[in-house]
Image (cartoon, rainbow, N blue to C red; front, side, top):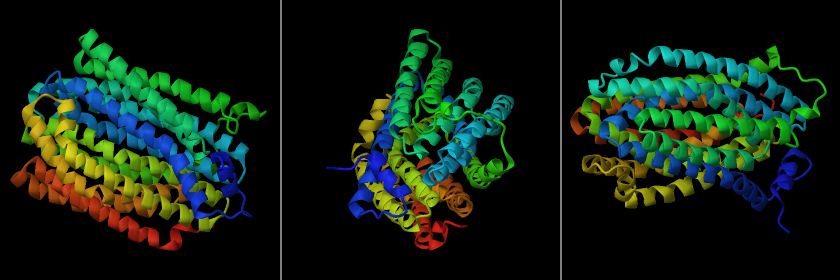
Length: 458
Protein backbone atom coordinates (compact mmCIF):
# COMPACT_ATOMS: atom_id res chain seq x y z
CA UNK A 1 0.00 0.00 0.00
CA UNK A 2 1.43 3.38 -1.06
CA UNK A 3 2.19 5.83 1.70
CA UNK A 4 0.34 9.13 1.89
CA UNK A 5 1.95 12.56 1.78
CA UNK A 6 1.45 13.05 5.53
CA UNK A 7 3.02 9.67 6.31
CA UNK A 8 6.06 10.49 4.19
CA UNK A 9 6.40 13.96 5.74
CA UNK A 10 6.31 12.31 9.17
CA UNK A 11 9.32 10.26 8.08
CA UNK A 12 11.17 13.48 7.26
CA UNK A 13 10.50 14.85 10.74
CA UNK A 14 11.45 11.56 12.44
CA UNK A 15 15.25 11.52 12.56
CA UNK A 16 15.36 7.78 13.26
CA UNK A 17 13.75 6.80 9.94
CA UNK A 18 15.48 6.42 6.59
CA UNK A 19 13.78 7.01 3.25
CA UNK A 20 14.28 5.15 -0.01
CA UNK A 21 14.80 6.91 -3.33
CA UNK A 22 11.30 5.89 -4.37
CA UNK A 23 9.80 7.39 -1.21
CA UNK A 24 11.69 10.66 -1.70
CA UNK A 25 10.67 10.92 -5.35
CA UNK A 26 7.05 10.12 -4.49
CA UNK A 27 7.00 12.81 -1.80
CA UNK A 28 8.46 15.45 -4.15
CA UNK A 29 5.91 14.53 -6.82
CA UNK A 30 3.01 14.58 -4.33
CA UNK A 31 4.03 18.07 -3.23
CA UNK A 32 4.91 19.32 -6.71
CA UNK A 33 1.90 18.22 -8.74
CA UNK A 34 -0.77 20.35 -7.01
CA UNK A 35 1.53 23.35 -7.14
CA UNK A 36 2.40 22.73 -10.80
CA UNK A 37 -1.28 22.46 -11.68
CA UNK A 38 -1.95 25.73 -9.88
CA UNK A 39 1.02 27.41 -11.57
CA UNK A 40 -0.01 26.16 -15.01
CA UNK A 41 -3.61 27.17 -14.49
CA UNK A 42 -2.33 30.57 -13.39
CA UNK A 43 -0.42 30.99 -16.64
CA UNK A 44 -3.35 29.79 -18.76
CA UNK A 45 -5.64 32.24 -17.00
CA UNK A 46 -3.07 35.03 -17.41
CA UNK A 47 -2.87 34.23 -21.12
CA UNK A 48 -6.65 34.49 -21.36
CA UNK A 49 -6.46 37.70 -19.38
CA UNK A 50 -3.79 39.04 -21.74
CA UNK A 51 -5.84 37.91 -24.74
CA UNK A 52 -8.74 40.04 -23.52
CA UNK A 53 -6.50 43.10 -23.57
CA UNK A 54 -4.83 42.02 -26.81
CA UNK A 55 -8.17 41.93 -28.54
CA UNK A 56 -8.88 45.52 -27.51
CA UNK A 57 -5.87 47.28 -29.01
CA UNK A 58 -2.09 47.08 -29.17
CA UNK A 59 -1.87 50.38 -27.26
CA UNK A 60 -3.88 49.08 -24.30
CA UNK A 61 -1.82 45.90 -24.18
CA UNK A 62 1.35 48.00 -24.32
CA UNK A 63 0.09 50.15 -21.41
CA UNK A 64 -0.12 47.07 -19.19
CA UNK A 65 3.15 45.67 -20.51
CA UNK A 66 4.93 48.91 -19.71
CA UNK A 67 4.24 48.70 -15.97
CA UNK A 68 4.20 44.90 -15.57
CA UNK A 69 7.82 44.76 -14.42
CA UNK A 70 7.15 47.44 -11.81
CA UNK A 71 4.21 45.42 -10.51
CA UNK A 72 6.50 42.38 -10.29
CA UNK A 73 8.95 44.53 -8.32
CA UNK A 74 6.42 45.47 -5.66
CA UNK A 75 5.02 41.94 -5.58
CA UNK A 76 8.56 40.58 -5.25
CA UNK A 77 9.25 42.78 -2.23
CA UNK A 78 6.04 41.59 -0.54
CA UNK A 79 6.85 37.98 -1.38
CA UNK A 80 10.33 38.34 0.14
CA UNK A 81 8.95 39.63 3.44
CA UNK A 82 6.35 36.84 3.50
CA UNK A 83 9.09 34.24 2.78
CA UNK A 84 11.05 35.45 5.78
CA UNK A 85 8.20 34.15 7.96
CA UNK A 86 6.94 31.15 5.96
CA UNK A 87 10.40 29.55 5.82
CA UNK A 88 10.53 29.80 9.62
CA UNK A 89 7.21 27.94 9.65
CA UNK A 90 8.87 25.06 7.75
CA UNK A 91 11.76 24.97 10.24
CA UNK A 92 9.38 24.89 13.24
CA UNK A 93 7.19 22.20 11.68
CA UNK A 94 10.26 20.11 10.84
CA UNK A 95 11.26 20.35 14.51
CA UNK A 96 7.71 19.33 15.57
CA UNK A 97 7.15 22.78 17.11
CA UNK A 98 3.73 23.64 15.71
CA UNK A 99 3.06 26.25 18.42
CA UNK A 100 6.21 28.08 17.34
CA UNK A 101 5.01 27.97 13.74
CA UNK A 102 1.73 29.60 14.72
CA UNK A 103 3.56 32.34 16.66
CA UNK A 104 5.61 33.13 13.56
CA UNK A 105 2.48 33.35 11.39
CA UNK A 106 0.76 35.81 13.73
CA UNK A 107 3.83 38.03 13.86
CA UNK A 108 4.13 37.75 10.08
CA UNK A 109 0.60 39.03 9.56
CA UNK A 110 1.38 42.30 11.32
CA UNK A 111 4.77 42.79 9.67
CA UNK A 112 3.72 41.84 6.15
CA UNK A 113 0.56 43.95 6.32
CA UNK A 114 2.46 47.08 7.37
CA UNK A 115 5.16 46.57 4.75
CA UNK A 116 2.63 46.07 1.95
CA UNK A 117 0.80 49.25 2.95
CA UNK A 118 4.06 51.18 2.52
CA UNK A 119 4.55 49.60 -0.91
CA UNK A 120 1.05 50.70 -1.90
CA UNK A 121 1.79 54.32 -0.97
CA UNK A 122 5.06 54.29 -2.94
CA UNK A 123 3.34 52.76 -5.96
CA UNK A 124 0.61 55.38 -5.99
CA UNK A 125 3.19 58.17 -5.79
CA UNK A 126 5.36 56.97 -8.69
CA UNK A 127 2.51 55.81 -10.99
CA UNK A 128 2.09 59.21 -12.76
CA UNK A 129 5.80 59.64 -13.54
CA UNK A 130 6.93 56.07 -14.29
CA UNK A 131 5.80 56.07 -17.96
CA UNK A 132 7.76 59.30 -18.48
CA UNK A 133 10.88 57.75 -16.94
CA UNK A 134 10.55 54.78 -19.29
CA UNK A 135 10.25 57.08 -22.31
CA UNK A 136 6.94 55.50 -23.35
CA UNK A 137 4.88 56.93 -26.18
CA UNK A 138 2.32 59.54 -25.16
CA UNK A 139 -0.72 57.47 -26.16
CA UNK A 140 -0.05 54.72 -23.58
CA UNK A 141 1.07 56.79 -20.59
CA UNK A 142 -2.32 57.55 -19.03
CA UNK A 143 -3.50 53.95 -19.24
CA UNK A 144 -0.28 52.67 -17.70
CA UNK A 145 -0.60 55.11 -14.79
CA UNK A 146 -4.21 54.15 -14.06
CA UNK A 147 -3.50 50.42 -14.21
CA UNK A 148 -0.46 50.62 -11.92
CA UNK A 149 -2.33 52.74 -9.36
CA UNK A 150 -5.22 50.31 -9.00
CA UNK A 151 -3.05 47.17 -8.85
CA UNK A 152 -0.80 48.75 -6.20
CA UNK A 153 -3.85 49.30 -4.01
CA UNK A 154 -4.28 45.51 -3.99
CA UNK A 155 -0.77 44.85 -2.63
CA UNK A 156 -1.74 44.47 1.09
CA UNK A 157 -4.35 41.89 0.09
CA UNK A 158 -1.91 40.04 -2.18
CA UNK A 159 0.84 40.10 0.46
CA UNK A 160 -1.44 38.50 3.05
CA UNK A 161 -2.32 35.81 0.52
CA UNK A 162 1.40 35.17 -0.03
CA UNK A 163 2.01 34.77 3.70
CA UNK A 164 -0.96 32.46 4.25
CA UNK A 165 -0.29 30.33 1.18
CA UNK A 166 3.44 30.13 1.93
CA UNK A 167 2.81 29.08 5.53
CA UNK A 168 0.40 26.35 4.45
CA UNK A 169 2.82 25.06 1.81
CA UNK A 170 5.79 25.07 4.19
CA UNK A 171 3.76 23.02 6.67
CA UNK A 172 3.21 20.43 3.93
CA UNK A 173 -0.31 21.50 2.95
CA UNK A 174 0.17 22.06 -0.78
CA UNK A 175 -3.35 21.15 -1.89
CA UNK A 176 -5.33 24.03 -0.35
CA UNK A 177 -3.07 26.91 -1.56
CA UNK A 178 -2.93 25.34 -5.02
CA UNK A 179 -6.71 24.99 -5.23
CA UNK A 180 -7.34 28.51 -3.98
CA UNK A 181 -4.76 30.12 -6.25
CA UNK A 182 -6.28 28.23 -9.18
CA UNK A 183 -9.64 29.64 -8.11
CA UNK A 184 -8.10 33.12 -8.01
CA UNK A 185 -7.00 32.78 -11.63
CA UNK A 186 -10.46 31.65 -12.66
CA UNK A 187 -12.08 34.54 -10.79
CA UNK A 188 -9.61 36.96 -12.38
CA UNK A 189 -10.67 35.89 -15.86
CA UNK A 190 -14.39 36.02 -15.01
CA UNK A 191 -14.21 39.46 -13.39
CA UNK A 192 -11.98 40.82 -16.13
CA UNK A 193 -14.42 39.63 -18.78
CA UNK A 194 -17.27 41.33 -16.97
CA UNK A 195 -15.44 44.61 -16.38
CA UNK A 196 -13.65 44.77 -19.75
CA UNK A 197 -16.35 43.60 -22.15
CA UNK A 198 -19.65 43.92 -20.32
CA UNK A 199 -18.93 47.22 -18.58
CA UNK A 200 -16.58 48.41 -21.38
CA UNK A 201 -13.92 49.60 -18.91
CA UNK A 202 -10.83 48.55 -20.90
CA UNK A 203 -7.60 48.19 -18.94
CA UNK A 204 -9.24 49.72 -15.86
CA UNK A 205 -11.60 46.74 -15.93
CA UNK A 206 -8.61 44.40 -15.94
CA UNK A 207 -7.19 46.16 -12.87
CA UNK A 208 -10.48 46.07 -10.95
CA UNK A 209 -11.05 42.43 -11.89
CA UNK A 210 -7.62 41.48 -10.59
CA UNK A 211 -8.18 43.39 -7.34
CA UNK A 212 -11.48 41.61 -6.68
CA UNK A 213 -10.01 38.17 -7.43
CA UNK A 214 -7.14 38.83 -5.00
CA UNK A 215 -9.55 39.93 -2.28
CA UNK A 216 -11.87 36.89 -2.42
CA UNK A 217 -8.97 34.43 -2.59
CA UNK A 218 -7.14 36.00 0.35
CA UNK A 219 -10.24 35.75 2.55
CA UNK A 220 -10.51 32.04 1.71
CA UNK A 221 -6.77 31.46 2.22
CA UNK A 222 -6.76 33.10 5.64
CA UNK A 223 -9.83 31.09 6.66
CA UNK A 224 -8.09 27.87 5.62
CA UNK A 225 -4.98 28.80 7.60
CA UNK A 226 -6.37 30.49 10.71
CA UNK A 227 -9.58 28.52 11.23
CA UNK A 228 -9.40 25.14 9.49
CA UNK A 229 -5.82 23.87 9.25
CA UNK A 230 -5.29 20.97 11.66
CA UNK A 231 -1.74 22.04 12.52
CA UNK A 232 -1.71 25.84 12.22
CA UNK A 233 -5.21 27.03 13.18
CA UNK A 234 -5.06 29.70 15.85
CA UNK A 235 -7.68 28.09 18.13
CA UNK A 236 -5.00 25.60 19.25
CA UNK A 237 -3.37 28.39 21.28
CA UNK A 238 -4.91 29.79 24.46
CA UNK A 239 -2.82 32.97 24.25
CA UNK A 240 -2.50 34.68 20.88
CA UNK A 241 0.07 37.45 20.74
CA UNK A 242 0.50 39.25 17.41
CA UNK A 243 3.31 41.55 18.55
CA UNK A 244 6.48 40.81 16.53
CA UNK A 245 9.45 39.70 18.64
CA UNK A 246 13.04 40.70 18.02
CA UNK A 247 14.19 37.11 17.41
CA UNK A 248 11.49 36.36 14.84
CA UNK A 249 12.05 39.65 13.04
CA UNK A 250 15.81 39.09 12.92
CA UNK A 251 15.34 35.62 11.44
CA UNK A 252 12.80 36.97 8.95
CA UNK A 253 15.23 39.74 8.02
CA UNK A 254 18.09 37.26 7.57
CA UNK A 255 15.99 35.09 5.25
CA UNK A 256 13.90 37.71 3.52
CA UNK A 257 16.23 40.68 3.05
CA UNK A 258 18.54 38.98 0.54
CA UNK A 259 15.47 37.79 -1.36
CA UNK A 260 13.97 41.27 -1.31
CA UNK A 261 17.22 42.91 -2.37
CA UNK A 262 17.68 40.35 -5.11
CA UNK A 263 14.14 40.75 -6.43
CA UNK A 264 14.34 44.49 -6.19
CA UNK A 265 17.60 44.70 -8.10
CA UNK A 266 16.47 42.06 -10.62
CA UNK A 267 13.17 43.82 -11.24
CA UNK A 268 15.12 47.05 -11.50
CA UNK A 269 17.06 45.37 -14.29
CA UNK A 270 13.78 44.25 -15.87
CA UNK A 271 12.52 47.83 -15.72
CA UNK A 272 15.77 48.96 -17.33
CA UNK A 273 15.23 46.34 -20.05
CA UNK A 274 11.69 47.65 -20.50
CA UNK A 275 13.30 51.04 -21.01
CA UNK A 276 15.44 49.47 -23.74
CA UNK A 277 12.36 47.91 -25.36
CA UNK A 278 10.02 50.94 -25.08
CA UNK A 279 11.74 52.99 -27.83
CA UNK A 280 11.42 49.97 -30.17
CA UNK A 281 7.69 50.71 -30.42
CA UNK A 282 4.35 49.44 -29.18
CA UNK A 283 4.52 46.23 -31.24
CA UNK A 284 7.77 45.29 -29.48
CA UNK A 285 6.30 46.12 -26.04
CA UNK A 286 3.18 44.04 -26.72
CA UNK A 287 5.16 41.13 -28.22
CA UNK A 288 7.49 41.15 -25.21
CA UNK A 289 4.60 41.10 -22.72
CA UNK A 290 2.68 38.38 -24.56
CA UNK A 291 5.86 36.36 -25.04
CA UNK A 292 6.50 36.44 -21.30
CA UNK A 293 2.93 35.25 -20.68
CA UNK A 294 3.36 32.30 -23.06
CA UNK A 295 6.78 31.41 -21.67
CA UNK A 296 5.15 31.07 -18.28
CA UNK A 297 3.70 27.78 -19.54
CA UNK A 298 7.28 26.48 -19.54
CA UNK A 299 8.72 27.87 -16.36
CA UNK A 300 5.76 27.73 -13.98
CA UNK A 301 6.08 23.93 -13.54
CA UNK A 302 9.63 24.64 -12.42
CA UNK A 303 8.31 26.96 -9.71
CA UNK A 304 5.94 24.18 -8.63
CA UNK A 305 8.90 21.84 -8.10
CA UNK A 306 10.84 24.64 -6.39
CA UNK A 307 8.02 25.15 -3.88
CA UNK A 308 8.12 21.44 -3.03
CA UNK A 309 11.90 21.67 -2.65
CA UNK A 310 11.58 24.66 -0.30
CA UNK A 311 9.12 22.75 1.89
CA UNK A 312 11.12 19.52 2.04
CA UNK A 313 14.53 21.11 2.50
CA UNK A 314 13.10 23.44 5.14
CA UNK A 315 11.48 20.64 7.12
CA UNK A 316 14.60 18.47 6.74
CA UNK A 317 16.68 21.28 8.19
CA UNK A 318 14.26 21.64 11.09
CA UNK A 319 14.63 17.89 11.69
CA UNK A 320 18.45 18.25 11.38
CA UNK A 321 18.57 15.82 8.42
CA UNK A 322 21.46 16.98 6.21
CA UNK A 323 21.27 13.79 4.16
CA UNK A 324 17.65 14.47 3.23
CA UNK A 325 18.35 18.12 2.43
CA UNK A 326 20.91 17.19 -0.21
CA UNK A 327 18.94 14.25 -1.55
CA UNK A 328 15.71 16.21 -1.97
CA UNK A 329 17.68 19.02 -3.64
CA UNK A 330 19.14 16.84 -6.40
CA UNK A 331 15.96 14.85 -7.03
CA UNK A 332 13.99 18.09 -7.35
CA UNK A 333 16.65 19.53 -9.67
CA UNK A 334 16.48 16.51 -12.00
CA UNK A 335 12.69 16.58 -12.03
CA UNK A 336 12.43 20.32 -12.69
CA UNK A 337 14.98 20.33 -15.53
CA UNK A 338 13.32 17.34 -17.21
CA UNK A 339 9.86 18.88 -17.12
CA UNK A 340 10.99 22.27 -18.38
CA UNK A 341 13.07 20.72 -21.17
CA UNK A 342 9.94 18.98 -22.47
CA UNK A 343 7.94 22.19 -22.08
CA UNK A 344 10.62 24.08 -24.04
CA UNK A 345 10.23 21.67 -26.96
CA UNK A 346 6.46 22.13 -26.89
CA UNK A 347 6.84 25.92 -26.83
CA UNK A 348 9.24 25.89 -29.79
CA UNK A 349 6.83 23.81 -31.89
CA UNK A 350 3.59 25.59 -30.98
CA UNK A 351 4.82 29.17 -30.48
CA UNK A 352 2.75 30.61 -33.39
CA UNK A 353 -0.46 28.95 -32.19
CA UNK A 354 0.12 30.19 -28.65
CA UNK A 355 0.58 33.77 -29.85
CA UNK A 356 -2.54 33.59 -32.04
CA UNK A 357 -4.58 32.74 -28.95
CA UNK A 358 -3.51 35.96 -27.26
CA UNK A 359 -3.56 38.55 -30.03
CA UNK A 360 -4.90 38.96 -33.59
CA UNK A 361 -2.16 41.44 -34.54
CA UNK A 362 -0.02 39.79 -37.25
CA UNK A 363 3.11 41.83 -36.46
CA UNK A 364 2.89 40.99 -32.75
CA UNK A 365 2.33 37.29 -33.51
CA UNK A 366 5.33 37.10 -35.84
CA UNK A 367 7.72 38.85 -33.46
CA UNK A 368 6.42 36.94 -30.42
CA UNK A 369 6.95 33.62 -32.20
CA UNK A 370 10.56 34.48 -33.00
CA UNK A 371 11.48 35.44 -29.46
CA UNK A 372 9.72 32.41 -27.92
CA UNK A 373 11.72 30.05 -30.13
CA UNK A 374 14.91 31.76 -28.97
CA UNK A 375 13.94 31.34 -25.32
CA UNK A 376 12.93 27.67 -25.68
CA UNK A 377 16.59 26.62 -25.78
CA UNK A 378 17.24 28.12 -22.33
CA UNK A 379 14.45 26.37 -20.39
CA UNK A 380 16.60 23.61 -18.77
CA UNK A 381 19.06 26.22 -17.52
CA UNK A 382 16.20 28.34 -16.21
CA UNK A 383 14.85 25.26 -14.40
CA UNK A 384 18.19 24.70 -12.68
CA UNK A 385 18.21 28.29 -11.40
CA UNK A 386 14.57 28.17 -10.24
CA UNK A 387 14.75 24.86 -8.38
CA UNK A 388 18.17 25.46 -6.82
CA UNK A 389 17.01 28.83 -5.52
CA UNK A 390 13.99 27.13 -3.94
CA UNK A 391 16.37 24.69 -2.26
CA UNK A 392 18.51 27.48 -0.82
CA UNK A 393 15.44 29.36 0.42
CA UNK A 394 14.29 26.23 2.28
CA UNK A 395 17.75 25.92 3.83
CA UNK A 396 17.59 29.57 4.90
CA UNK A 397 20.74 30.32 2.88
CA UNK A 398 19.54 33.14 0.66
CA UNK A 399 22.37 35.70 0.62
CA UNK A 400 24.82 34.14 -1.85
CA UNK A 401 22.14 32.78 -4.22
CA UNK A 402 20.51 36.22 -4.27
CA UNK A 403 23.83 37.83 -5.15
CA UNK A 404 24.26 35.24 -7.92
CA UNK A 405 20.87 36.13 -9.38
CA UNK A 406 21.56 39.85 -9.24
CA UNK A 407 25.04 39.59 -10.76
CA UNK A 408 23.81 37.36 -13.55
CA UNK A 409 20.94 39.56 -14.70
CA UNK A 410 22.77 42.87 -14.34
CA UNK A 411 26.17 41.90 -15.68
CA UNK A 412 25.23 39.30 -18.29
CA UNK A 413 21.64 39.99 -19.41
CA UNK A 414 21.52 43.77 -19.22
CA UNK A 415 24.93 44.21 -20.82
CA UNK A 416 24.09 41.89 -23.70
CA UNK A 417 20.63 43.43 -24.15
CA UNK A 418 22.13 46.91 -24.36
CA UNK A 419 24.54 45.72 -27.05
CA UNK A 420 22.14 43.56 -29.07
CA UNK A 421 18.86 45.55 -28.93
CA UNK A 422 20.00 48.40 -31.26
CA UNK A 423 21.12 45.81 -33.81
CA UNK A 424 18.53 43.02 -33.53
CA UNK A 425 15.61 44.77 -31.84
CA UNK A 426 13.47 42.68 -29.47
CA UNK A 427 15.14 39.49 -30.69
CA UNK A 428 18.43 40.81 -29.33
CA UNK A 429 16.87 41.33 -25.90
CA UNK A 430 15.60 37.74 -25.83
CA UNK A 431 18.91 36.32 -27.06
CA UNK A 432 20.54 38.11 -24.12
CA UNK A 433 17.91 36.58 -21.81
CA UNK A 434 18.51 33.05 -23.11
CA UNK A 435 22.29 33.29 -22.73
CA UNK A 436 21.96 34.69 -19.21
CA UNK A 437 19.55 31.96 -18.07
CA UNK A 438 21.92 29.22 -19.25
CA UNK A 439 24.79 30.95 -17.45
CA UNK A 440 22.76 31.34 -14.26
CA UNK A 441 21.54 27.73 -14.26
CA UNK A 442 25.09 26.42 -14.63
CA UNK A 443 26.25 28.64 -11.75
CA UNK A 444 23.51 27.33 -9.46
CA UNK A 445 24.32 23.70 -10.26
CA UNK A 446 27.94 24.35 -9.30
CA UNK A 447 26.80 26.05 -6.07
CA UNK A 448 24.59 23.08 -5.22
CA UNK A 449 27.51 20.64 -5.46
CA UNK A 450 29.16 22.37 -2.50
CA UNK A 451 27.90 21.11 0.84
CA UNK A 452 28.13 24.26 2.93
CA UNK A 453 24.53 25.24 2.18
CA UNK A 454 23.18 22.07 3.87
CA UNK A 455 24.80 22.55 7.28
CA UNK A 456 21.98 22.46 9.81
CA UNK A 457 23.83 24.32 12.58
CA UNK A 458 24.87 27.33 10.51
